[in-house]
Structure formats: structure tokens, C-alpha cells
Amino acid sequence: MPQVANEPSFHESVNLMIDRAIAVMDLETGVATAIKTCAAVLQVQFPVKIRGKIEVFTGWRAVHSNHRLPVKGGIRYAPHTDQDEVQALAALMTLKCAIVDVPFGGSKGALLIDPAQYERDEMERITRRFALELIRKGFLSPATNVPAPDVGTGQREMAWIADTYKHLNPGDINYVACVTGKPVHHGGINGRVEATGRGVQYAIHEFFRHAEDVSAAKLSPELDGQRIVVQGLGNVGYHAAKFLSEDDGAKIIAVIERDGALIDDDGIDIEDLYQHIIKHRTIKNFPGARFEENGKAVLELDCDILIPAALEAQITQENAPRLQAKLIVEAANGPVTYGADEILNKKGTIIIPDAYANAGGVTVSYFEWIRNISHIRFGRMQRRHDEQRGAELADILEKVTHTPVDADYKNTISHGADELDLVRSGLDDTMRLAYQQIRETLHSNDKIRDLRTAAYVSSITKIARSYLDVGVY
Image (tube, rainbow, N blue to C red):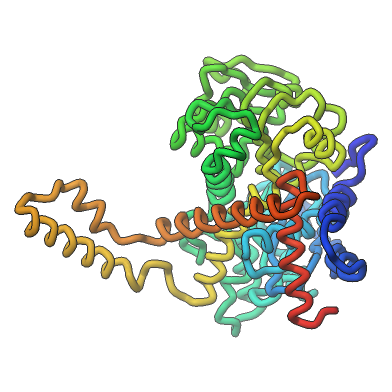
């Protein structure tokens, strides 16, 4: 990722934020250094024959911390990526897993490629060859290093990688757990596709459950009617915006994309816009909304909540002073630079940090990995039992009250939780408890002034304890 002028690199920015957290902790210098150190970085270069010519591709996989195994983190395909970005993302994954109490270390991968320039069969050959390089060098397996989708990748890439691992390791009965984010019919789990966006929604829900926090952000107490600007309508931004508008009554007044932005004070129908983008490959000419060519300037629009869900370094020292959002929810990784973070904190802007806000993906990836390792679908053992108990309860109510139970109510209480119900319940519980831990950390230390530092302190405390328990230092 190109470095922003007058800003530290992405990796340096993450380390500066970690340093800010360490400064308010009673942590030995050596321990702090160990936690910041990236354990291993692999760079591979491999040839693939494309349209009669040999092309050489460059990819990376970084392992930030293997204090817990396997290490976890997505693989992104992007035309602008580098080792610095991959190491920064790996560090964030270590912090993220600890924040939401997912027992993984942090890792991340990237391939320097523009997927839009290649056909499906070409992408398959490239992906399988990249997977081969990672597997041969010990950077991909169910027990040690488990990738997932990220920017530019999705279910199909994960299916190709899993199939490649299976053919290289035919005796590994847990082969399907070598990646997460797979199609459901290939070992994936219901709810994984929308997990990060759903996690953003649950994070905002928990924020609004704390009147003190909402008041500090100078927001009205209800999520219904809040004016939201979303940057990036990829997987995360689309699902977060869709859920917040359809489930919670929030108004998405602007959507920022690569080719500009759309603004509508009455609220944009996200599903209609999403279908428009699929059909026309652009947000332009979407009916009922005003098009703004300078999309990045729309980050400065007057709104209640800003959700940057695109790439890192979108909010910098240059535009941070002009931002008007009362609450920023980092759905992307690293959208706010270190310098911008300092400016926004001084302004009093509340930021729900990326290491917490977009942890929904790794949380449900953990559920998928557990499902794969245990070789059983969630809900299979107890669903019908729960339905039977619910039906019996409805019968008892009818006998006691001598009144028939309404059919809809009867169906509700006799419903047995299926896999999707359990995934959503587990994700909601995870996001609630993590935010409560962050708040507790924030209010227990007078030196901590913001949610990001509190989240990092909470995370680093857990990692340091883990290092001590296993005798790393």
C-alpha cells in the first residue's frame, strides 16, 4: 500500500498505537518488544502460464504471534499491497483474536494481483499455485496456519485452497479446516459470509446499550434514525449497512465507492444499490441519489456515524480535522492513521477501533474451524430435542390456562436453534462481552482516554499473560 505523505507507514502506525497502550501499562520492556515482534514473514514468487505467457506473481504470509495455534488471518488479493501492509495486518489479527477471546495467534497473507484482470480459470490456477507455495513452506495447515477471505478473495478462493491442501495431504482427516470462509457445502458454516458486517452491527448495538458512551459521543439514545455514511460497499460495508438500515432503522445517507459517492438525506436503499452495482459495475446513475465525483470528500459529510469499510489510511492528518461524524466505527483494518487518531481524540470524536469492530469475521471463522475439527454441524444433537421441549411447554400452558396458545407464539417457543441461530448468538455474545471488557479497562485506568487504547491494553494484557504461562519469557 503506498505510504501517505507525512504519515508513518501502516505497520509503523499500528506499532505506534501499540506503544501508546504499552505506555500506560506496567509491562517489562522485553515483553513489550516480544509482543510487537513479527515472528516470521514468508515471501514467495512463482510463475504461472497465463494466455500463453509466463507471469511471475509475488505473495506474502506473515505470522505475527504463534503464542496460540493455529495462527489466523485472511489472504487478500490486491494490486497495491506489500510486506509492510501484511505485517501490520498480522499484528492487528493477534490483537483482534485476544480482544474477542478467540484462541488463535495472528497471521495475514497477500498476493500482489488485480483480480479484475484475470478470468475465473486463471484465478484458480494462480490461487492453487499460491496455496502450493504456502503449504510446502509450512504456512498453511489446519493445525498451524489457517487463512480466510479478505479484500479481493472469497468463498471460491478458499474452496480452491482447501482442495489443493487435501490433494497434498490425503491422510489429514481435518483437511477442510485448513481455511475458513468456505462455501457451506464444502465445509463452511452458515453466517460466515456476513459475519464481519454482522459483527459491526453487534458492536454498534453494544455501544448504544451504554447510555454514558452514547452521551459522550453526543448522539441521541436510539440507533433508529441515526444518519450513517458508509465508505466501501464490499462484503463488510454492504452487510453492515444493510443490517443497520433494515433491522435497526438507521438511515444510510451516503455511500462512498471507488468511482465516487452517492448522497441522499432520506436514506439510500442498500439492497437496491447493491443490485445496481452488480448490474452496472458502478454506483453512477443510481436513481434518487445525488452523485459526487470526489468520493473521499464525502467522508467529511455531516453525519452521526461514519463507517469506513474500505481500505487502510482513508482518514489521515489531512482530512481528520474536517470530519464531522460524532462516532467512527472502523469496519476496515486501519482506516484511521496514527496521526489522524491523535487529532480525532483531541476533537472528542469517539472511535470504535478496528481490532474490535471488525472481529466478527475471525469469531465466526473460529466457529467454522471448531465445526470442521469436531466433524459435526452445530445444532445437530440438540435442535429436535429443544423443539420437543418447546412444544411440551406450549401444551402445558394450554392445559393450565384452558386457552389455546396462538399458533405464531407456539411456533416461536417450539423453535429449535439451527446452526445460523447458534452462530449469531455466539457472535452477539462475543461482541457484547468484548466491548464490556474494553469499557472496564477504559474506566479502570485514568491514563487511558480512548477505546482503541483500552482495547489494545486489554488485548496486550491477555497476550502477555499467555507468554508468561507458556514460558516464553
